Length: 430
Figure 1 (tube, rainbow, N blue to C red):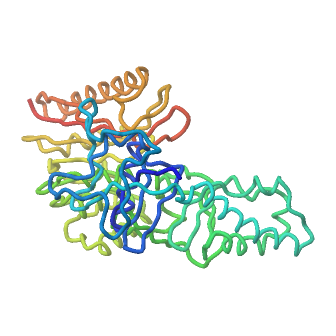
Figure 2 (figure 1 turned 90 degrees about the vertical axis):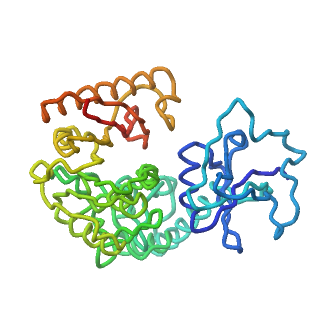
């Protein structure tokens, strides 16, 4: 049988490793992860990325890729060509989070493929619904099959469905029993449906509870626990790569201002993992403010955060910030003058500017690694933003400033040819 290269990682770090691999397109999505009885997880990786994967950071000793607890496996099986894992022509990318470890191993391709797992889960839901339909004298049709949810969000025991499922007329005939059956088929206790975003200034979700008595949920990302009301507050699972990036910052001794804190999406990584000395969290949605206070206490960092429950343009703060996070899409431009006013006048700092940017082409994990049109569009937007922020800083302080583009991070695709990106802009007084 064919062999598949995998990273063996501790179970507690599997999610972070998976996101690191996903962000660099190293994860082989044709296979599923495998949980081992030894408390480790196997993450399949695509063979072509082997030359770029550095799994032994300098702070860790060299690890034998064939652990003694497993049978000896030839790391270069005869069915695959010889791969030199450290060629001089490609830079190595460290995918190992600080303080963790990983091992490169080869496993047989009997790993469960995701599409097989997905079919099995889909069949379970179909089986439950088929039984329900037959009990009401209805028959299973292709129309009903394509009307099942293709994706959903899971928050603890609650599953959040999208708006484009269970719309066919036959479902309405069994409405009272339908949601209990769906919950059973998806392994949930509560169900809700999201149909869009409200135009209320808060970007509140349009969510309706379908099954269950309350709408508060718990979600864990990278060791941080978030609790929130799913009908009142947004939670974007697609931002996990940016939250992991923020968690990797070294903010020791820094004061950070989070202009759009929400329930603590970025406030908490700055405090829990990046080690910020203090964070000023600005948020005007009262439901999000309630959740933010709860999450700060739950994660043990409430003593290093000041919550400002008001419009950030009205916040009475001086030039206190070493770093300002502007995490609002589709644009955070209304917050740019506020951010410029908050940066320390003598030393300046860094702005992390979120924006939805439109350009033709396919997104890559860095602007500079994409096609020519994509790269030029990214550079043009970043250069314009840097110039405008420089002018704002001069206007606020009456002194010239230098703005430098440190990095542009592609977070996720938001819509066709629209991508959520983050510009790291260093701003220093001249």
